[in-house]
Image (cartoon, rainbow, N blue to C red; front, side, top):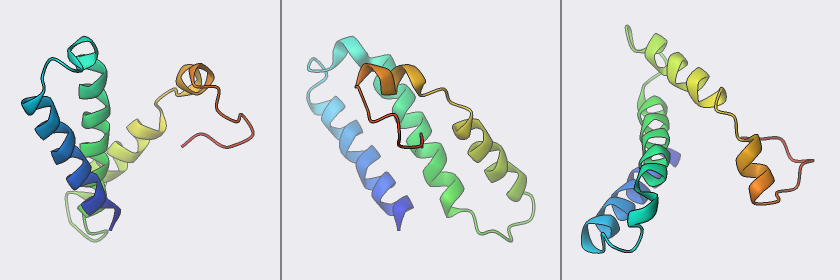
Length: 86
């Protein structure tokens, strides 16, 4: 499942940051932002569709992630603009 892949990736990144904090020290806030989005998506994917009280929470997460403006990032890495943004 994608949520499992996200969980393991998040753990690997956090472990690497703990073991080698000096390597990416200049971009801590950017890494933290990406980890936050990854963890939120992982959480939303793990919520069963029929979970009372949590359905709205997952919808809010999907909406918030969908509202992230990736245009500057895509332009900076010179991605193929014909592909739809995630």
